[in-house]
Length: 328
Image 1 (tube, helix red, strand yellow):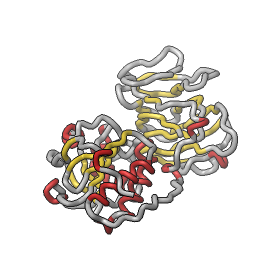
Image 2 (image 1 turned 90 degrees about the vertical axis):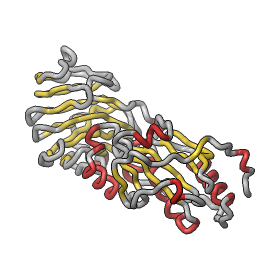
Image 3 (image 1 turned 180 degrees about the horizontal axis):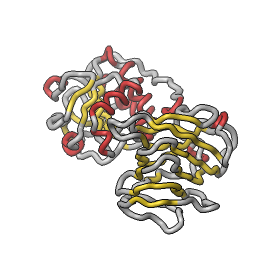
């Protein structure tokens, strides 16, 4: 059933993608080249767990409506400096099976042109180049697809009213919201919370840290020789670790070696034991893994009842930079 166009009032015009650092999977596209096409502009950054969990739906829409002329454009606007490195972005979108055009927006030029403030963010543009709907954050995928179908029908296209039926897996699986008791936690002092190593953080200097005997929920601690800077915490000598008392099905850590450095080995445990079946996709049953570039690593995915667990990651090589824990 066709919705009346007044249900989706005009919010603005599709801006040009001027100032883009690079285009991936496509030559540069401009609004005049998109005339007569329905467009979905999808803002994200490749380590953002919320964007990652929205990706399978955007990917499915791009595939389903390709024959109706839909153009999906991803906008990769970095949160961290390493997300501005083109090699990292190219590798990440390939690994994540992002096949539609992606604008690399290192200078935030496209972000500002849309007056955007969120990862993820979706903007739905009709065939006349007008922004008619937006959605910020995860969720409401059925509503978003119905908006998309309406804009395609307004453009005179014959569109199947059925909605995509997908069951995301791996890191793209929806969060276990009912048992999610831990929130995004940054390790750099600019946004850090819950740090519990005795004596607190020593800013911008090498320091030997230790972990207390007990951590309360959502507290974390460092052990070993670290330097805590405004954004990451960097390990100076092998054998350092991070401990976190968390409550969630999934635990992820954005981390890795800086560009040009060798892959770094690590080992995780839960309550002092091997993770076994609770391992994430980036570790084996014995808790062993390797960080080969800076991205989000899924370290824990639990099955069964969820309770408070003590997570620990030990780094067997020096030089790793750790940015933020996220949960699901």
